[in-house]
Length: 495
Image 1 (tube, helix red, strand yellow):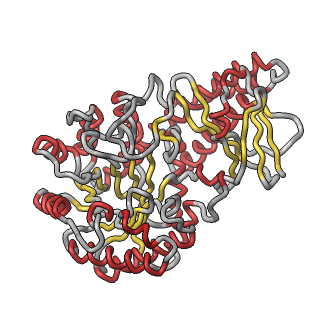
Image 2 (cartoon, rainbow, N blue to C red):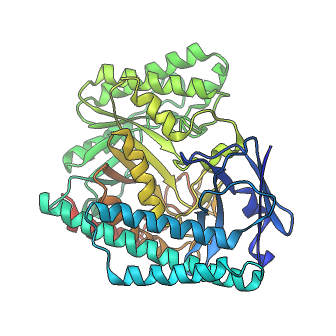
Image 3 (tube, rainbow, N blue to C red):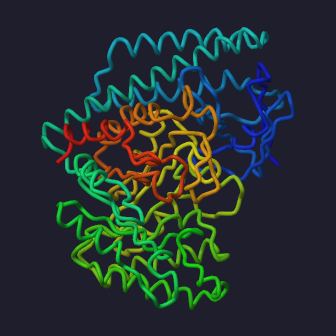
């Protein structure tokens, strides 16, 4: 049994809830099965292996809110590590390595970045050499961590500016898709006008639960009109997910067939074939399956979820061989794997499908930011950049589907039992924080050539939706400030 321990000073910075969400990962960034706890003095993490690894924990940083941060590679040792010092070391190490990689491909690093990084390194040196005095060491380590995060943001902003400029020299207007999920009701005239000013594509959800609430009785009325609206307004239509592998995706009547996997396979084939046949030639991109890597529905095993995903891909390709077929991966950093219920990490799940020669045309990464459980902890811009770079090794087009909460209050129209973690953003989750996040992160994502589309998981909080307060329109139907930011980004960067 492997064991690592971390001392926290002051102890008020740590809670049991925060410690439980911590995990260890290897060089491949895949979390190990582990159990972490807080005993009032130390964070203790146990695991079945004793290899060196990176420790990750949600940590509140002044000016940044709560971020999932990681250490550099650590070996096991009897003496506890100073968590403050190791988090600062990890981020500084990450920034320095990324600067070297990007400078090798021609990135020009501004003086203010070099100056801020130097400040961080000097503060870290003070923290690392005064660890016999926890108060002084922790104070300097916290300042070093802030400097490291400042440096990371300066670095990614610099990269985004230069990479976007290079892309625009080749193509004044990028072909990247920008869209949102239209939901299960029709848009009113005001919302539709705002939508067309902002987006160049749309997700028609085609939720099986909504289409076939009763076995054999299909209701396409809303989706027919949504597809027609997309065609009329020359929006690229993305259909699906055809197979949403959670409780909100399967119709209730399928529960009668729980445990009868051959029958489930047959029902999946019938629905996918019926749906794709109906909209063939009208929908350009099919999201064949979503949340298959994490879904918990009808007691399906990981292998069965993989087989259902394969069946959805095969059926879609047979019916509409000219369409692009995607699969969606939820929680791509894989924090959920610490529970030990999965054999395949998210990227290995996608890689298995990519290698199976099924005609997979892309992978969609679903990131529902800040929600717990079932969402993705907040991370800094450099971590997002590294995530996209990692997934680009698959050699497939990438799409990102995002949700950003704008309130911590109860949401009566939210269908999922989850909520954004308090303290996740400086000043809390708000419409202003949503706009700021989009201003900083969307240009970075657009700068990545591997990214072919950016979608938003929820358009409006005024209709029933998955995640609390995650829409771009509020509960009263008015647009949130982020919508205007997206419209400006689309106008400047996209066709």
